[in-house]
Image 1 (cartoon, helix red, strand yellow):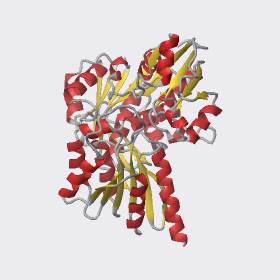
Image 2 (cartoon, helix red, strand yellow):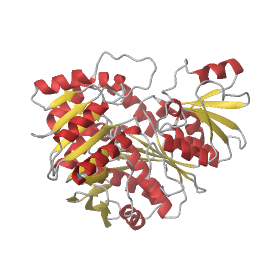
Image 3 (cartoon, helix red, strand yellow):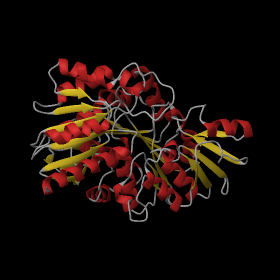
Image 4 (cartoon, helix red, strand yellow):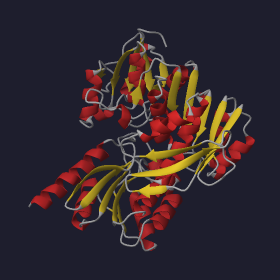
Length: 470
């Protein structure tokens, strides 16, 4: 990247685009952008923040694209988008978000890439926090807002620009762009069916870890266990909640509604440290083990890493409690694929309270691919008395196959005896949840790719509070 180079981010408000735009700006690039959500009046707070940081915003009608710029596009941007058409007319180079991120990552000197079907945003944030707390001053690019780096002046902390060598990045396999990254430290949290076939996922993840100086792999997942056996990387660092042969193994966990504590043994040294996490669930125990091993690969001592994890405050929309009113807790959660949904439901079911779940699928394509697995997950993980309501998948325009709908999922679940229904829209789902809610319940707003879900959760909380006050 050349300092002073102008970049136009098409879709600048996206969860992957905003952090990259901020990093490019911090490195001396000139950043402008557009977003369909801005034109539609959604997520105004994020765009106000971008403007305060100096990002100039335009309508997504092609008028903002100028000669001399580089147009940066995400995987969700189609050829028909006016900005792309304008770039073609003007001869403006077009670069994918992944290609630009990979360029910065691969030249950083110490690239720590975090990949996997589930857990990568939290693990990325954990690693970044450990490196920052231990004085390594990392650059971090994440797909989620990292609560440890949020401040009044920096409310959307999905990125951090540091002056140190480490560059920690969440790496995406869904579009195949993981193949562009050459990490020094490659972390794979787990592998399961999500956006691509298992054969293609195996090829992509294998290529990601091969050639890395150190690979951090989870022995509790069958696919990453196989990857650990097959990889030709220099140093393999494995972790597990149960397998004593792992390089980092957890002891018996102590679960609480707001956290989890457990000892960790480092096999090579025999040292044992206690980890006290302020984020709940056994899935976060696994994420912490991955982060601990990655930090050790970066030269952080075991004691330093454990101390930093005690101060980790999580990422937004990962089992985030929006608040409590009228005896009902409202939870905002990013879960959108079977593994994430299972982790969320298992964590919540460890403690009393009925679950009233609204699941908004994150797209028609994933819904079609994961139809069978989603039905099985909800059927297995929802308890007697729990309720599931579903609007149609998130859809902001463009061409896609909409042959499988939320109604298909809900009808299959209902036939299995699950209290599930697809409703006309999100507003109708909210009305149903509020009508059902009683003291001791947990309302869970679940889904990805739509920042307005947090606003929806907050709105439910306001209405519950008003009902309580009436």
